Length: 287
Length: 172
Image (tube, rainbow over all chains, first blue to last red; front, side, top):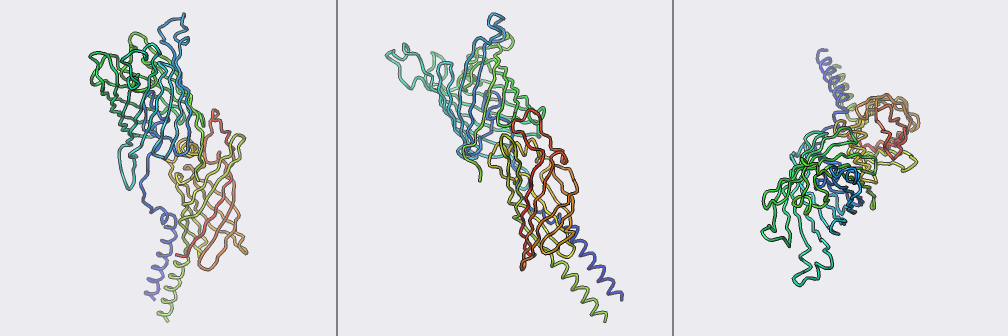
């Protein structure tokens, strides 16, 4: 009889165990969890973030930068002067996007490519950073009188930037980024360097799920002639649109200009207000 | 006699354990009709267990496995609505309370976004050879699961979401 009871209990325990484990049976899968949305946009403020557009997504950006806030009521605190950049970006792969744009300042046309090399992950495979590269070419269209000079060549108008972007999402609200940058100018003034290196720092802090504050600073390491750029941004996300409001000591929107050609000084009140509106269109839908 | 009983009990026990059906690639889709844009998504990686002896039914899915036609919607779904970094999974733990000619009633607890609610729904449950096929449709109210829709969002997301379940189990 004892045996029967023992077996009965055994069976019973086995049986109930199977019931309790019904849900836990399902949770055994162990895959790396990739961290997404380190930043809201493709840019921290002016500089590139590690974010890449998803495959088949087209982003259209309208960027505005006004004059300095200290230019007085006569200029309506800068609102009378404005620069614009129009840009298109497209995601070729989930890890690669390309873009073109045109800034009204010096009629500069830019083209860029961003590739995400590694994603931050946790779980079965841990990696602490998201790493991406961004390369861009800038064509400043000089005026006819300048281009007519004897020594002028087409290549004189070109400059390039190469960036390594290393970011970490520390928690769901706070992300930080380090961006070592090399900018090459084909044509520079006497005693200026063609190759200039800088180190960018970026951060974003979410205030709510849809609103975040961003900050960005580029420290020039060699060939410094102008001021370092410091910018603050405010991102508001509303479905398919992102509105970004910016304050910066540079009115430029392209790397070759805002990193090394910033004349403005925060302490003097040379602060430029600006905004971006970006809209995404899904060209190819996911299957 | 003892031995017979013990063998018999052992067999029952064995039999009971053998009546479990498992699925790893079940499908759950949802659909919401909205004035600006319809919202739909599909998850093909739903795992589930059905125990034919106890009529227990559980399923579990990862929120990040939902695929949307539009990537940005998927990002917003995970980041802003379902907060999949905090609540990575949705689960159902329940029982088939009635089963007549393949028409079944299911009662249980559905957990989404960290909130658990009791649901009762009807569906189909068919046993074909070694496979069990279940399918069901029900409506989930976002309010019940504390999924907030802010005023500034332009999608005009509907308050109610239609959910479709389709899972084919294999005998374990």
